[in-house]
Image (cartoon, rainbow over the protein chains, first blue to last red):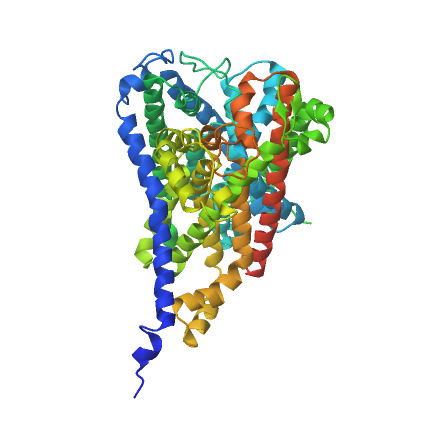
Amino acid sequence: MAITVGDLTRPRGNARSIRDAIATGLMATSVVLVMIPLVLVLTYVIERGSALFGWRFLTSDIPTTRSSGGGMGPAVAGTLLITGTATAISVPLGVMGGIYLNEYGRNSRPAVMLRVLTDVMTGVPSIVMGLFVYTFLVLRTQSLSGMAGALALAALMLPVVIRATEEMLRLVPDDLRFGSFALGSRRATTIWRVALPAALPGIISGALLAIARAAGETAPLLFVIGITSKPNWSLSGTNTALSVQIFRNATQPFEGAQQRAWAAALTLILIAFAFTILARLLSAALTRRSGAF
Amino acid sequence: MPPFAAETLLHDRDRRGVATDRAFRSVSVVAGFSVLALLGLILVSTTNAAWPAFSAQGLRFFTSTTWDVPKGEFGALAFAYGTLIVSVIALVLAVPVSIGISLYITEVAPPRLRKPVIYTIDLLATIPSVVYGLWGVRVFAPWIDPRYESIAGWFDSIPVLNTVFNGRPISGVSFMTAGIIVAIMITPIITSLTREVLTTVPSSLKQGAYAIGATRWEMIRGAVLPHSRGGITAAVMIGLGRAMGETIAVALVIGSSSVVSARLFNPGDAMAAVIANQFGESTGDYRAALIGLGVVLFFITFFINSLARVWITRGRRRAGIL
């Protein structure tokens, strides 16, 4: 019997092709498998959270644990204030650190070591950052504050921003830098006026992803910001955050407290998704533009 | 040297230029080294605060399972055991699924499906730990509670397994529940690192496998996986580090019981969860012991991550990236 090319490239019905089909099936199954918890978590949060969610929920003061209804105004304020401050601290520092790694350090020994350390630091458990700020700041000043929380989150965001900046700067072709040097610009001018603007959308996208992660963090805030039931827009004095409120209310037996936990979870997910989508849109715009490189 | 016109023109601005240039460089060097400084500060500051507990407990801190607050005995072994068990369960569940997803994205999926699948997996990483915890303790644990009993029934007559798949969860919270929730949470990171490794497999290797008549699965087994073994191991180790440090979700679904038990359906406790659950009510040596748990956690995760990252860096250099 003549063997056609089709038979050779696509063996059918024998043990080998069956094994191939099973393997492919298992791979597709793992994708489906991981979608299940995603869909389930989102449906429950939206379904249970929407009962209380709304403008009043986002702005009213936190009632006592036993009472029903009420809002999470102080926690919304705290999350925005603390995450915002953490961003203001970690992004400038992280961008400069990324500039060092890609523009000055490159493959020098210290840069290679710092690159590994930065990656390692992204794996340090977030609760350790909380303990660090507690022992370093709270114990010394004897005061819980939003600032302490912001520092813990900033420590968590810093390595992420550094690496995102570095990766994006690496994508900027050296030709652009050479062009700038050829016009007589100094190193700093070249980096600030040429390399950084070219990498900016990517850096902002990386920073937004870091913010999305930081906004949902609980462990670093748990014992450094204290608690409050009135909004506190100041960095000093005790504060609270959505994540901490969810943690405190999750195991409360009272229906009202649980409802507030679900609505706070919905708020937190909306914040995190908003920043993630913004980051995606930015990097999509970057990909479209990258033909210019 | 004869003065060029351009040079005299630029002279004043140039001085400032040199100064700005140097200042910019210094600021960036300081920022780059801030990570090193921060890691050093974390180490010194937390170890210092935990010292009273370390010196009072001595080796007992690592070898005793007795965590008796009124007596002032703080042995962390039961919690270390819990951390290990939860991490192992999480890895056993998450690693095959993560490798499967990565292979699907890099080898099977049509190009237009790749991005959507990647984005969806990344969404899992965007959901905060505390939301997984809330869902875990309010929805998942009560749902799985009666099912643990039937699962225990299947393994009833098989030695070893009838101990492992056994136990009495308290309304669904247990080692197993915590392990499952953590598995969901570490899948995105293992997947994205594994995917990165898989894309570095040279296409000449894959084409070679196809050329000698391999099916896709044979190509994956013969070319892709052997080439990626080191990188996947590193990804798994980073996943392990994440699992060990996972705090809030575990604190809500593990059950807070300091008992060493091989029965996975029993409630237990883990290091990070203990810190989160007990810190608020602690004082003095008790608090120092909790900070000590954090120090141990820092050392373990730092070690695991360093090993994995050095591994990845070497692999990248070998693959010609970087």
